[in-house]
Image 1 (cartoon, rainbow, N blue to C red):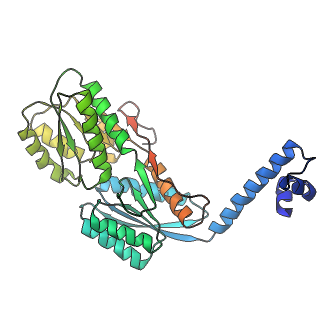
Image 2 (cartoon, rainbow, N blue to C red):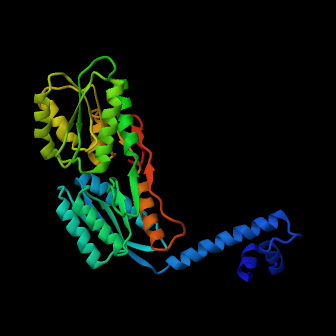
Image 3 (cartoon, one colour):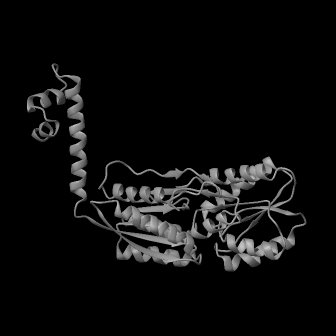
Length: 336
């Protein structure tokens, strides 16, 4: 009570009357006590955090252009998490390999971690490794793509269904005067985020442009080197003009290389994420639009969830989907 009185600059008697809801207290005095309690709670949280060193592990299987985006966002947000001191350990691979991802997660369970942030394929081995981490008391947050049916604590990332439907709306609006083929390259169907985007897109485009043919291209790992042959094969198999591309899985330079070689001029190309490749392609006019969400927001939410699960911040963490934004060559964020 003495601390509240000092913080509120009121007498202890007045504070006592407010806390016990007695008469004779003005509305400003009650508000001052409420503000003082909130401020003291915040200070207490900082005291609990002071001196704590947390080690968070980032486990990702994705192309470098995306892992770099996520890693940089997490490093920036970790620096803002003071007075907690957060150190990030990264376990990054470009090739999609469920067994390797599960092995990394198992090593972290034995080695110890204050929290694991994971983007990995939705595979039985990976799901079992995640459940084992949770059983061991280690907070697990999925990033960018979820792991269905696991005991992971929180999922953070884009609203994938909304993104796929937004892409369908954009392409059906831009290319409204002819019928043909739209290519949908995904890195791996095992990533639930990309699968959800692609499924939502195909469902929406089949309603908006029922005469279009959506051709899904799977298995590139999101790498330019592997997507070229896959696009060549897909183009050779279709008997209608290729009008557009919706790329939930990246490797957009490789997609364009294959189409350029085939002499195909697209009417529109919608991609995902403002990584360095897509920024260059957007500025060059090779991409029509990029579906963007703020990875820094995801990083902030993921770190906050771990702190809550560690009991260092109040409240229960919740899974949140980040809304999608549309970036064209004319509204690229200035900070990029």
